Image (cartoon, rainbow, N blue to C red; front, side, top):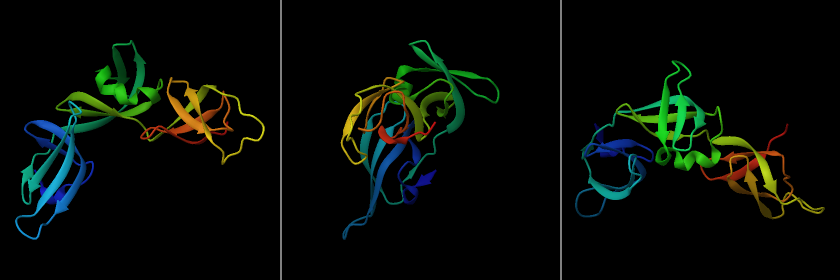
Amino acid sequence: MYDTTAFRKNLKIEIDGEPWVIISAQHVKPGKGVAFVKTRMKNLLTNRTLEKNFRSGDKVGKPDLRERDMQFLYSDGAEWVFMDTDNYEQVHLQKDAVEEALPYLIDNMMVSILFYEGKAISIDLPTFVELEITMTDPGVKGDTASGGNKPATLSTGAVVNVPLYVQQGETIKVDTRTGDFVERVKN
């Protein structure tokens, strides 16, 4: 069980038999009345968000969550298949569980899969991925590092804004949390 004093961002809790992750938690101690914790949470099964206040001293459950590192094998369009590299066990996930990761998911990538009561519910990508630019406008003489940005299509189909000096065929590092260009990768 967790007490409200333990509430912080990214803490996973269980309410009414469902797993939730705390997006934000603010401890409030008003001049009058009982202290409380104002939280914003996201349901890990349905992705629904909820704002809820907990009185100081309230207790919530610890969900039965486990994370396992697995390797992405392939997709047949309806399911995405991941394999545990230790025991070669395969897990099949539906599109709703992998949808946020699709723009950056590449073959043989190692990801962290979250299991709730033995069932895979979501995946976490590495913070940074290296992807090749398959299409972008050509750079022209005079483009500088401090200039503007242009859209670039990556090998996975994702579109990110890159500096004007970056060319088609180059490999770049992308932040999977924000979808932002980080740097060019030297070959």
